[in-house]
Image 1 (cartoon, rainbow, N blue to C red):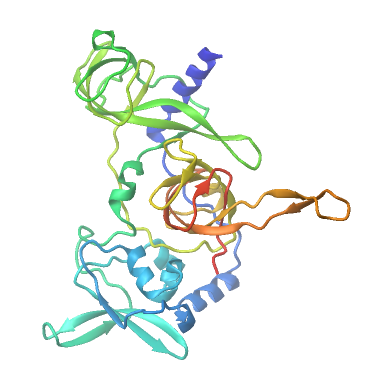
Image 2 (cartoon, helix red, strand yellow; image 1 turned 45 degrees about the vertical axis):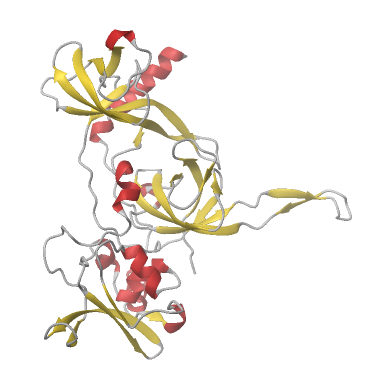
Length: 374
């Protein structure tokens, strides 16, 4: 059993370097339905959806996020695209917003739209409105959807892998002075390094299966990130020095090339179709999650999940036996209770990772998430 598990890990990690977040799969939507949805979205939001103290204007500041600004103007921040009057294409490829730009709230016929204003004549002068967000420079400096510090460690980890492939990923075979565990600046010896490989490698612990709470079926394997090691000298085995250790690095751990962290701007938005699922895991193996923590969801690109989707989290009500009923044992389903919102930032085929943006109670494995947010 141990041998087969090791082979499975190797096979899984062997293809990790070529894994990309798959494009979202669309559920069938008729052209008429799409046109109606776009027309409604571009009309703005009802005034009743504005936050209680929504400002008439706001100057974007360094450190702001799209989600934070959304909360200034809206009761439901995921309705940000509607406030801008954006259609589906604009949501997928949003323009960028920069510190110093002025956001102006226009109200007309019971609805509100946000426009971008530019000062005319210096500070205190008039403001010229533009119909859409405009890009005034390079992407560098644009405000992100959420704080990059909250998710940067997860943009290219944790690593979701599959069963298929061949067991060819490099592996730690020994440590300096036969230490049981190693940490930052320690030396490890690695076999299976490809010729001409890069200098920097990420180290992962053997993949753990993620089971769907609804079916108990294994739907993915999550390799736990342990750290980064740099090649000191090539050979068989190669010598690597540990640059960063988030976990103890041991014999048997696997390596994949370090990838650059991509941090595109995702427009926070609700899914255009109903997506309903369960929480698969809480990162770092804890039992409960709250604001600022990362969770895995049992829906991915194959089910229509996109980066930027915002889902409502609900504590799963479960079942009780009503012993007060006439028959003395009626089984009753308790209602699910809303407890927060999760923002999806990384999508795989059947798994997504999201950051809990706000919560009123803790979230546990098996709790529900839904896209019907009204």
